[in-house]
Length: 154
Image (tube, rainbow, N blue to C red; front, side, top):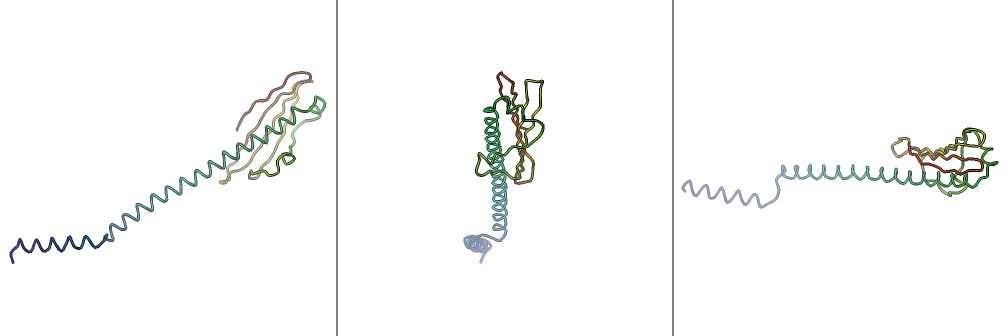
């Protein structure tokens, strides 16, 4: 046999080994790449779920505040003037279930002279990670006058 014949045999036997399957190194590299892609996907999915829960909670808190504000706007001056100081309100009379984690409901009424009141409603809750969130509405109610409210999220 000559050197050219040996090289051809080695070359043929080496290509036969490549056709049998992947090497262990190739499998490890592929598995590592797949694990990184899956880890990133699951991390993104977790973030998306947290964002969705926060948006849903924020929208529901806005509905609670708007409902309570509408109840206050239906009151006459005598009923509004009887509200004073810091207290709570109960949204369960309007909503059968409240999908907020550890909610609290606060109403703060301040007198701005003898014929005007500032009424602040606040809903506070925590998210899946335990971070606190709150939203509040403020309205000014005037005896024999017009009133309006403004929205502010904290």
